[in-house]
Image (cartoon, rainbow, N blue to C red; front, side):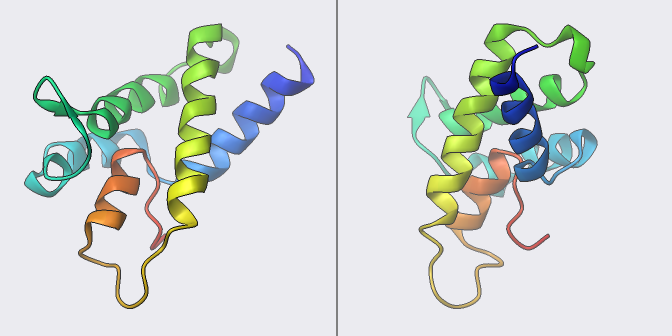
Length: 108
């Protein structure tokens, strides 16, 4: 494993604050399905959330290059979107819901 792989895995685990079961429950909600750019009926973030659950349940030794590539995308999305935090209470906002689809609850 390279230093880059270790950094990706570490950053991913730090930024993805939702446990697999918690993320799965969230993805079943209407709020989860209400946000994001849709591609064929499912938003990019919603599909990513399902992939994140798989990655979180994969042993480190079994992670593939494709897994790490997705982890890199997740890290980038969470960092970019977090920087756009709106003012005020974000508890019930599309901004928060979108981040949660990517496994990050900004209120945690």
